[in-house]
Amino acid sequence: MAKKRPQTKASRPQPTGRGRTAGADEPVPVVGAREPCPCGSGRRYKACHGRTATHAVTELVQRPFEGLAGECDWVALRELVPAATARLTLKDGLPEGVPSVTLATVLPMAWPALRRDDGSVLLGLQNDTSSGDLSRDLADTLTRALKAEPGNPVGTGRTASGVGPRLQDLLDPAAPFEPEVRTGFEFWIPESAENATPEVAASLERANSAAIPTVKLSGTDAAYWCETPEKNHLRWVMPHPEEKLLDALARLHAAGAGSLGEGTRLVGSFRAHGLMVPVWDLPSGMGAEECEKPAVEFAGRLAEALAADTPLTGDERRARGGLTNRQVTLS
Image 1: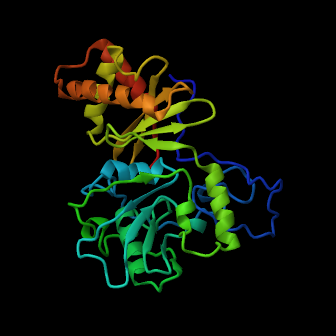
Image 2: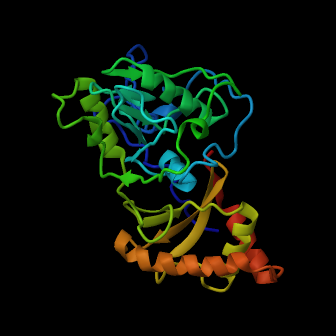
Image 3: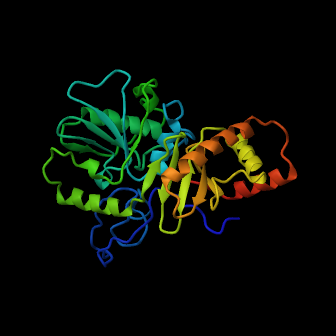
């Protein structure tokens, strides 16, 4: 059993830095769902003052991004990556007056979407939603954003379960999904725009201070290196069926082939939106570039282990039990 669990979200809760806690009668500003709550509790906004009173969850869709290009990267941007964007391509093309649609991990002040002054649309991914189908809720927000007046944020909708299009109905399945991981959230403010409002500037400062450095590996699919004060991690979203992947990881672990090199260790996994996310601890001096070759080599070993169909040995069953015990469910 690992002594420490891997981080479970894209960034850590941090104090506001203002040296005070909001009083009982003092309103708490709205911030991004994964930003530190301005009340000073040390918890994220979504787990503190941003918690909605009720959620109309009727039937949970386990894999809301299934069928979309880059499903694993959608999961990573939703749960693991602090700052990233990706261009979206609509099946029916862009409406008149909308030059582009861009997915963003987080938008200022937890806006679900934003129609910019130039008509372009930013769609926020890391927001709480109103039903059990994240894809349908995001599609509803996107539809409303495409019709919004330029220069305005788009509020939270109330999507009835099973009603309305899903992202799979709106997005072109043949278009590649290519996330661009960023060092901060300056993309909120276009270069051509004048100075941001005080509210947006404050939200930008909070978001940047809470984000952990993250890099997407180039030689493998949906593998993300991140840096933390204690140690670094590699978090790798994988599309394989969970039971088959657990067997394969157990085979490798029992054979001493589950690491990414000296000083690294497979410590467990997340379960997010129907997919597994194995997590490795890395030495603090092991950067993203040093992960590239070991990750490619591990992908080859994993492919062989996934193809194996012999029953697990006793050592492999024990390794599998350990991996199962170290799973953390994010969503």
